[in-house]
Length: 188
Image (cartoon, rainbow, N blue to C red; front, side):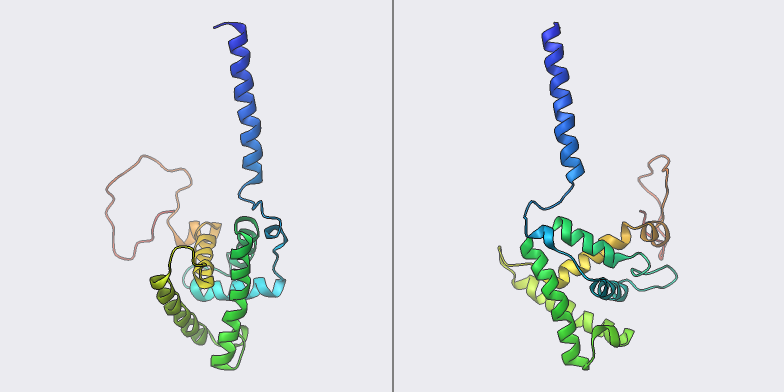
């Protein structure tokens, strides 16, 4: 190898590092200018926490509210969703509360935990029907996004990974066949 080839390779490696580093630092931020303007109020984040807590309630382990899933959703929707999905998500929060008011004559924040569960189960049935008839290019359903973000936010949080799942910070050897006992937690 001569000096010229060595310099070309070093420049290529260094250039890839700089370009790759910039892409890494930008993460999944949307290039859409309208998407960057998305934000939720503290009341909306509290609302998301309550919806998430209904989906993953506190039991013997802390629930979604303790994992601050509402704040996680705010960041994910702002940084990773395009403007169309952000609008669907925002309008979905209003739809959920409107559906609650029409059914219980109260806002979601005012109803009991049992009523919240019943309402979300009803909306989940609507989601299943929507997904069965969904065609290519149809918009996402707001509750599907909300439910997916709840699960992602909870199980990737410290609380979800270490208390709801079995967690090994530094795993040992790979064991392909580990006996499973009914009621065991999944591995993080």
